[in-house]
Length: 361
Image 1 (cartoon, helix red, strand yellow):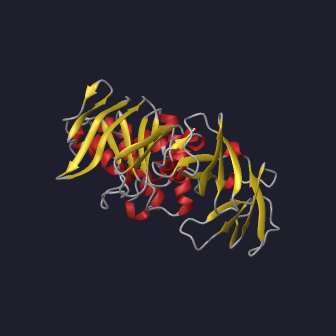
Image 2: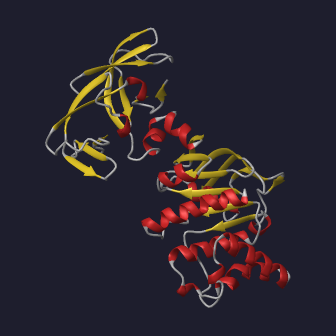
Image 3: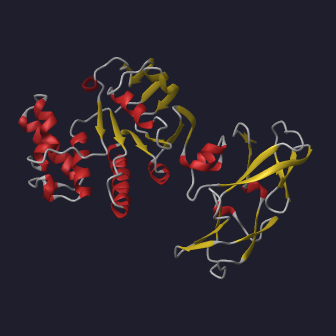
């Protein structure tokens, strides 16, 4: 296995720039997830690493080898696509070993590697079946097995679970996590699903419009986002953003008013330079951080309630594009149409500059 280094990597299609100077280090054996909305460049970046696209500028190394200009077959990578791309006329065993056979590996080595991959993925009883006799999850395991037998330096996954139903996605997510633990392999995984990113990754790379917004562990990005985009993208349900204006500033205390929450005053501990009085900000608060016993009290009418068993979510201002979401936990007494009295503690909230989206710390 090996680590990966990207230095000032750019990609343009004609006059359109899609990847903008990406710098990234992936450690040997690390599970790194590229996450972001559709069109942010995550799949393009993965294809650049695989060699399926040529970088316009910048360099890439895998291990100690510069692979910027190397052919895909010479990079030591194996890719698992969203589509299983299995040969329908071949058995599972033949599908998994076909690539090795075509590159001239001895039959005994092909059989040995296929058997080992089948053992890891629990495919032994299925080796003589053809793809049409397999479920979607089994087919994806075969596609992963086809990568394992190549013994690559880096595994690349391009939204491999997108074609599976919800239950199978959870099962395959667990299997991929276990596979990483068993192999100790360097893996790079692309998804738009931040739940997959949070549950699988050692390191998450949040992308927007071809740029890296922030890199860090799942809990680091959840607890300490650099900007409103990362804060809103990481966490499910997404963070609430409440309009606020600066009311006063004294020492490290910046006091803001929540303009659509009855001008409730919230003191925040901010050590960076304070914006001027009247400056528009956004106060970010996660649905799970509302607390009726919190130091700041608010009231809001409830339009819709979703009961999920272990917890419930109340939605206010449902006519807006991003309604206010409040986790009720075990509170099942709240009804639609009620005015909910709740609150929060300022240390659980974040402040963001409305103009730049950057966080005030």
